[in-house]
Image (cartoon, rainbow, N blue to C red; front, side, top):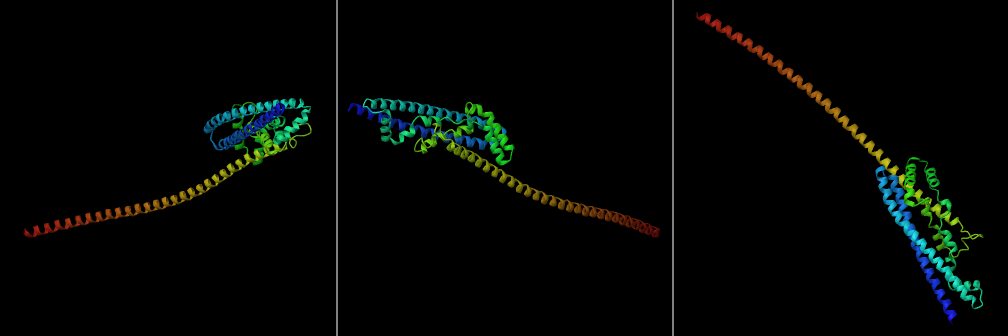
Length: 309
């Protein structure tokens, strides 16, 4: 009865560790989703921001990414501790089983039978999946892939330069933005699998097909964001062209109106000049008539004076 109590205690401990591992993995998955969201938002903002805003955006991103990276590191350490404790519990369970003249292999099978999901929580496969493959650490190839996809070197070159400038500080070492966003693929694949046999080859190494598939999904996601940005730029360029045409038409209309007003002003000036000349001519005629009348009056006065004499 004592031996059975010890076995049940170990089994409960394993189940408790299993629950803690699942909870830690879920928290790790959430943290990496948040990290991916920060990376996607950073790429989007850097691509549309000017030079003065890039440094401020990078500073905010580095603070967020540093906090997320610390949380991920703490969760990974927790997982390692849980795996170590689970391994110790399995060893203790095997030792207790040997006292009943049963082999450790049979005892492990009994424990696995009681806890079907325990097989996929063995420390071997998840710990290997927690380490990102070396081919993920290739930001230059990632940038070249995006540039070849769109055939544009301006925006991608700016985005790539921004990533290379802030990569060493924000991501800590050789792990880049893209490699961190792909780093959680091992955990997600381990949660979705029913056992480690489907994700390991004959040498015990994890299968990279799921990782490559997730890697391609991440690339497609970034490419989709870039396509949306490019479409927005195209629409903005079209709107600018329409505005330019409208302004050109307005400018032409205003020019025509100014020409008409200038012609009208010139005609009014000509009419005014004609009126002034006519007025001056009439004034001259009046002066001549007054002079003629004055001469006549003077002549008549002289004639009358002469007659009176």
